[in-house]
Image 1 (cartoon, rainbow, N blue to C red):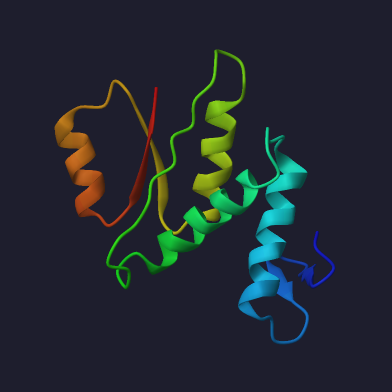
Image 2 (cartoon, one colour):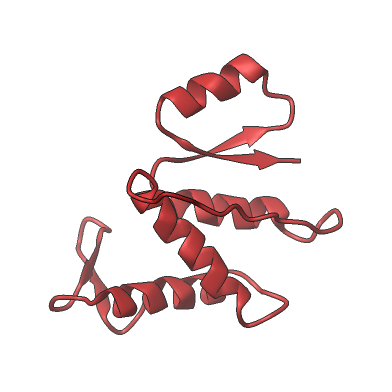
Amino acid sequence: MPESAGINPDGTVVWRGEPSGKVVFYDVVHELERLLVFAHPAIPRFVALFIFQTYLRDLLRNVFYLGIVGTKGTGKTTVLEVIRELSYRGVLIGVGSSPAAIARTLNEGCTPFIVS
């Protein structure tokens, strides 16, 4: 848990004081670094920016997407699961999903992640 945050008895996270955007951003970066191993130190920052844009996507003119690649067993799905948990209305969609199921998910306002 970052120093700037604490946990309530019900398990919810609460920041001590009024957090700035920079504090929240680096708390997310540090949590990603705690949970996952990245090949380059800049990658958790890109992932954190992606997570933040899910909360702001209706306000943004353009968004970017992450391509999670690697050989079998490298943790691609684990990365996507962590992103889903930290994102606004995140959901995982498997490669076997029908176009209709994907369209329904998009229409419900979810931010999909396609897993291959």
